[in-house]
Amino acid sequence: MNKVVVITGGSSGIGKELASLYRNSGDKVYNLSKSIEKETDFDFAVDVCNEESVKNCIDKIAQQNSSIDIVINCAGYGLAGALELTPLIDAKKQFDTNFFGTFLVNKYSIPYMKAGATILNLSSACALFPLPYRGLYSASKSAVNLYSESLAMELKSSNIRVVAICPGDTKTNFVKNRIKVFETNERYGDSIQNSINKVDGNQEKRMTAEFVAKKIFNISKKKNPKPMYIVGAKYKFLYFLSRIMPKKVMLHFTNKMFGQKKNNK
Image 1 (cartoon, helix red, strand yellow):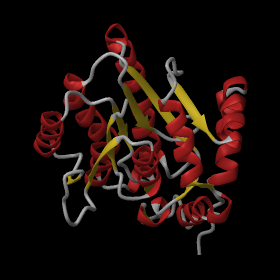
Image 2 (cartoon, one colour):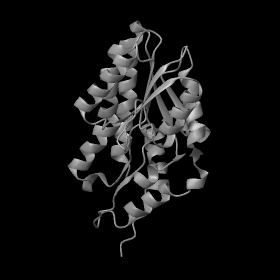
Image 3 (cartoon, rainbow, N blue to C red):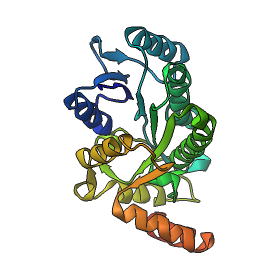
Image 4 (tube, rainbow, N blue to C red):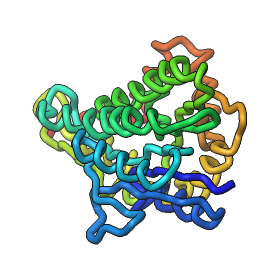
């Protein structure tokens, strides 16, 4: 039986690849994205930070179908910079999109979901082992993980599955679209920019969006999925290390690798 699938951020990257996979399976796919220039019956220009916009769109989709079977929250972006120097407005926007956007889409979709439905919240490997100068992004995705686990418990009696997906570095426009706050002072010198450049490099070594999307697609088909999945063998190994190593040691090596030594001029 064909499914009704709602995907946020389905116009690019992992979301776009997922939309293609579900459409090729014969499912009805609705794309909610800010970047849509021309709306269609299945593509809606929606800002997930706007509660009224989200509600109206989900209601419209529900009116066209008996229920919503799968919701995948892919909309999000990255923010990089020193926590001390990041403007509050940027910090709030990071959470508005990555966390509250997911919250709103699920809030208004759940009333139209029946037993057997699935919610997939796209998190990040950064939610599991944060990096320096990625604090707000890591925190927003960590919030998605804990929110997903709480929601899974609340919806268990309704037999609605909730899963957090934590992919590692993926070859998309994510790096290009990341908001970078390079403001610095004597405390940080050029370590902020050096760290950001290091993490953003090696694009060719990243997983492809097709690979990650296929993993997520297969997870959505599971009848009894785990609460969380990590996509990428390297990130699974790092997560294993983070579970057995003292936190202080893990943070020390992570900071040594990605913090970058200050080099004031």
